[in-house]
Image 1 (cartoon, rainbow, N blue to C red):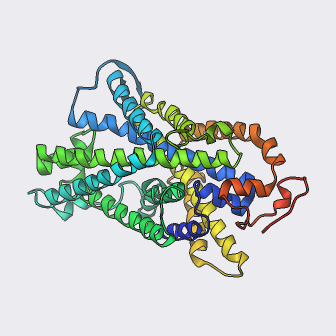
Image 2 (cartoon, rainbow, N blue to C red; image 1 turned 90 degrees about the horizontal axis):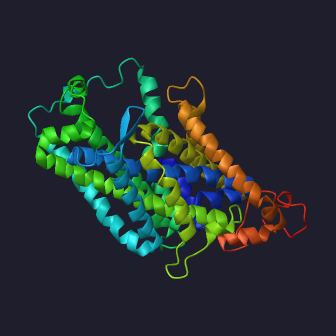
Image 3 (tube, rainbow, N blue to C red; image 1 turned 90 degrees about the vertical axis):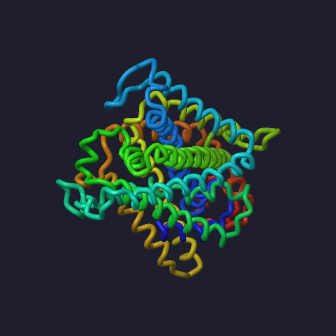
Length: 430
């Protein structure tokens, strides 16, 4: 993830525009590559909004058992769906949608507070676990999943790394709205990855070390992490963990609402989506239609139940790793055009390609299931439909005009044959 982040920092320095990976992909591969990359990343970001909404229901079951479990509807993959939980998830999606609708400055000020709440909650839980009577490092044994080889266990976790660490790459999506210098962006991205790794390690350590894992599984908790917090700190543990999870959920929903809508806005601004998606609100100066679209798709999640989280994780991992691959490849092409070699971008591209293979190649321990494939095919068909609607507009628009609309400057270099975009004669500027 760090080598990918370093590639991002190079691209931010030369292409500080909303849309991030979409803009980078256009610079390196032209219209088709740009849309494929952008649409895949929209899926990844939308998935995060949905998965955090579903976490609201899980948090409610843990802190307020039975309160929202009324109005049984149906069961999906073993998870009962209730009207009460649908309502609370719907309310959270609407709340953060309205917040972003009204402007980044309002949403951004809350983001910092929620991030601190998450960090504090995890630190407090870790302190409580290491001081409990049942804490022992021997509880961490076995170190790998039973019935799987160490390599297969590692591959399974590494394959979802794009999902686990997605977030650092959202900085470019709002590059036009925040005054991030390239150096600060680099520090922020690497810091986010490092902090994320530390927090994941702390949570995993807490769950694995407090009691033997078979004993924990035998208790059949709906949420093992919550059970560990309660065991270590009692009712206070529930409050601490609830605060941490609420912080994670809120920062996730808010941040990815921002990233998703700015990405959709950038794609529409480049004329690859209908212009409706690129309209800016006259009062709040936000891409309000892109926000409404994000909200509408996300509102499907509450009806699917928490059990589909695994499908969402798979789709998010595929979508984001495709964007990582494009970014690293474009970074390599950018340096190559100057006659320079950039080892970091090569390593990032190789790592991204390997992870994509882990998720999609038959026989891989981490290959995604049938359901995510079906949902991704639906998403691809939707994207192809949008692109076909716009294809004539793209072909009839001079390349320099598209470049201006994406980057805000037609003199910014691109690294593909601009004459192939359209048969119409025009000046080429590389």
